[in-house]
Figure 1 (tube, rainbow, N blue to C red):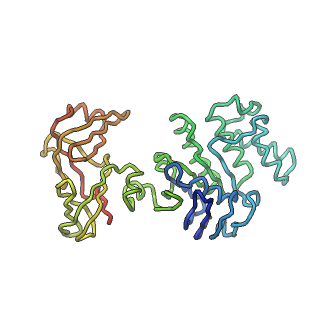
Figure 2 (cartoon, one colour):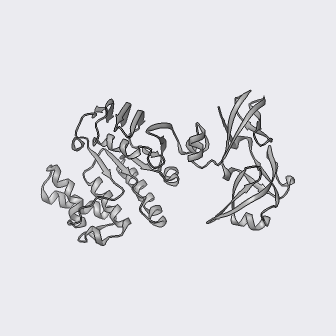
Length: 350
């Protein structure tokens, strides 16, 4: 559906550098990255608001690199919704249909009514945007964008300004829009949960470059480098040296002095070891674990994180456990504990 080749755009203070992406028809594609990564600029370049200095953008097999935004059949939803404050909800949704001038007034009103009913905003038809909640405004923005039947829907941090409960609800709605309309959607966010829940595939973007593209599992469990691992919350990032490898299981001496076993093809040399904190089991004794990796340590920090508890040991290992597990183990600062994890939970890179 979208093919971007060798895209480069320089704004002097920032640049998109050598962007190469392919996004499939009907895919929910998430561009994930920290603030200032260039995510919105890339989205706006796809939409046609910026013309690249070099490279090309193709949508549906058509070269649109130099095409005006209104000729690309692209819908765009901003974080601030960008609704017209002097228009009612119904008028906002109908606005794009009027601009197209491809149907009669009655046909436009019928289409608007269908979209409002489908997204459950019919009861808001005669309200003005300033009287709506953030979630209601976002649903109206979605309705306005899909009313004109775009081939592609671009979303720029669409849920960032909403409370947690509304975000969860609208994630479901966005999935429904994609599945029922069979529309290609490209969603920009810094929120990792959004990327995991919504994305068929995810691209990690930093400093104007795409660093990795893959499924949510690949991005969050098999990051390509330390910068990506740190951003996606791996937390346990250790330097080490491969000492041996038997039948695809590498023995790695890490900088804390411990030996860690990992499923890896590396047989020697310096490596980085990544272990997600939720993949680690914490126990009061070594006998409670049958995992290949079992390390002893003392608790330095215990921090509540809502339903989870984050535990840091003196050997730099960080573990995420449930509050129930914390209470069962009677954890306290200074207590001696054991952490264990499978060799398949360890990701190794050069």
